[in-house]
Image (cartoon, rainbow, N blue to C red; front, side, top):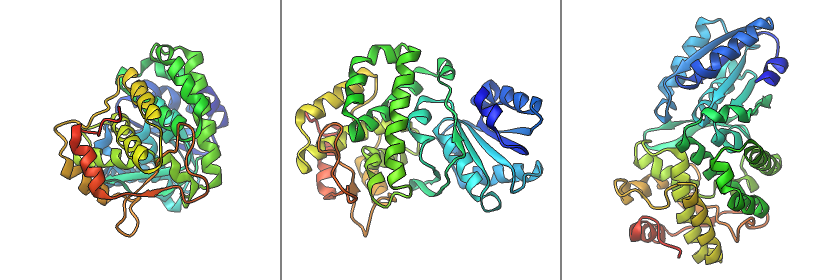
Length: 344
């Protein structure tokens, strides 16, 4: 975090973090900012996806008001994907938008969530239905903080790294396959290499289509089904595992709709399983609930479910219109077969 401290804008700095990360990294960061002469203060909210709500955002806004935050205040989103989304949306709307810095502390946020400017909160019926695009002044990822990350959180980040590899980088996918043991052992050089590759790939895509009007939609691979699973589970299923199951479901669909090779679907599933991620819809999440949530997904257009499906590992459809219309009956059949529809 030293680089963040050195490059933080002058003025007030609101460090927004959750109840897990705040005491561990937020308090030292605030002390460092104060030592540099910045009026820094820490706001923490309860950890977990359940905090990504209108009520939490309203509570955070009241805390900004109490601290006298104005249009020159910088918001630092310190934490994982939930923090980045919630604090980012807070920055996007406070006094019509204030500077934002993303300081991801989870692998998932470093490889995906903190990159690209998307911010959002959830509704009970769907994920990320309210939000905005608000690009940060900078993203400061310090891989050393991953040493304290829980194993399931590490795996969640690896799910997003796999997603990036499938949609944009076949070389990265092979690196994940070869380096799976090193990544699970948290070897710094392997983690740093994967993080850098993911950031470069996502930045390349986002720079062409910041507001997801075309090409950026490739990054949604696995996420339409994942968001349906999360909403149907009342957000008790974490995002990374949901994306893992979503990719298996959608790769099976791709094998039928875009010609995605079955051998690639098998490689994808095997890699996810090697990272300890689920590849089958949890039995306690009802198929009907998943389908109803998907029907409300923000990616639905004119009542048609559209998915971002790969042609092969590392290759998505060319051009700007990259999504494929889906017959809900086919999706239901796959979800009801064994939880995903086995591509093997």
